[in-house]
Image 1 (cartoon, rainbow, N blue to C red):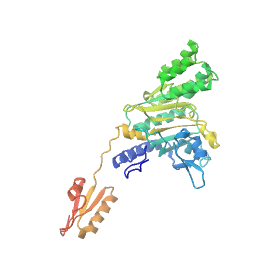
Image 2: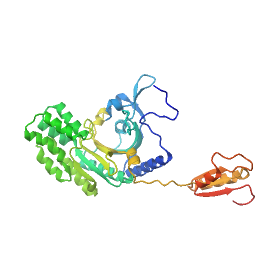
Image 3: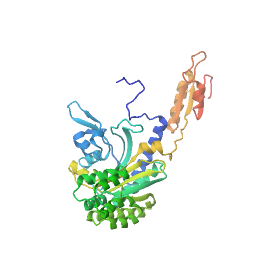
Image 4: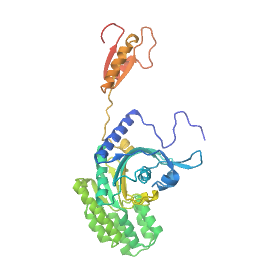
Length: 399
């Protein structure tokens, strides 16, 4: 393998230029302020965690974890999401705090990828966790906050697709009871949006026409509140019925929030079926075909850290918003340029400090003396980059 050139970096990692950083920080600030107004307090967890705790509890598949060894030979991981680390903190340092807990975060996460174009191994997430409340009100709150957060991030046109893991579990157990492998295969098709493969998996089951129709009908269960009625007619499973009742209650709360126009019920939406236990959702921006946010209920996670609590939350896929959504336009603010001769350096730098204390952006430039060599960047070029130029020349008196 050839040695990397000096300007190369590992596949899946990127540099953020000043303009992109400005956009990232603007989105971060706007979204976290939005979350704070909803009562969510920011939390920061380590970049590196123990594999045997957070690593195995994460929703990320094991092969996508970045693993490393410390000096004692203990396996560590770079965090692949924030939900599992926050669950660890809730179960330990925050165990005495009153429930429900509302926590927010913004951080980079790491996932090992195949070397494919456009895939990132390090990216940013901004999200929340609502711990200790299993009600439809809690699920509706995180969906409504996801909508408010997308708007704060500059995403103006989007839709939230909302489903429920319990409905699919109940339907599958009713139609093909006990056939775990076959159920997992059908879920994989829905998770990957591979509806052709989903139908092929149904055909392979050799079911009678009525049962086959039950499984295929879920592909048509997308729309508004009327989907709830159709879903109840599709399955007689108690688990499916309870799940639909919960989902419809969530939708009714979203109507009260006044945001239901952004939401559609999609019962093929299952999120990561090994992780989520109830309501799940994804948000799609008009400019992008891939999700810009995702979330749902994960009531079993905290048990892995010794504390059994319900929880729900979501994360914005901040990098996709930065790269693919044009709602936030960053206008570069030109600084004030103070240029000065050597004799008036102290006077000029004092004025620069005064202006900075007033919130102004200021850069300084030492003017070349007669006969001195030219600067790498000419005075004319520096002047063109400035909003205002203040000169402290060699002449006596004012500017």
